[in-house]
Image (tube, rainbow, N blue to C red):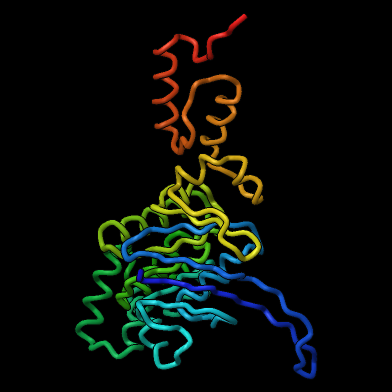
Length: 295
């Protein structure tokens, strides 16, 4: 079993009237089975209403299954006595860092989580130092979070989760409110934590360029998992991805359109460097890149 596993997971949002009688149910997760291995970097994609954020909230027991089971660190999330351990196993980073930052000074904010779970003072400061260094924010430790950029705030929020030493970090669209530079900062930080600290990362995103950084991409639609594979395996299926109201990386779409026009390019090109390399090899091979024309 991986660090996070779901079996036949179902979740219904229930709407109630003024007398608390059930008025309507909306199925957000519909029979999801997923197994995420420790140390993986997994991106979860889906259009608005696909169920991806609802799935994320099950990964540290913010939501409880309507049906089925979720295991986090081999603990069943439905068992109340497991919640303390689950919340320390899987940390959560939300879309708006202002909702997660509570300290008036960066280092105090990062130390709040460990202090709240009873970590000794000396170890708290060791964790604060290590976490700020891991996200590249040591130089800002004495700053007010209010004076930081959006990307810097999000890195502080990640450091606050890191200081609690989770085995897994779930990020629910952490770059949605950031400019391109801020998005780059956060994704670079997350990738380094995954590679260097072996922390499992689950990234909920709607930016395809972020998804290609992952080891594995899961696509959701109408509460179900409809695609699951490496970024190359998923984005090679351009028309299928688009059928779920999603885009593919711009360079992937460019290569796909050129291939349809006759240029002999492979499927699943994900980066500009790969695109240039493949295009140059085509030109060197036949001088034109066009398939031979037959009478």
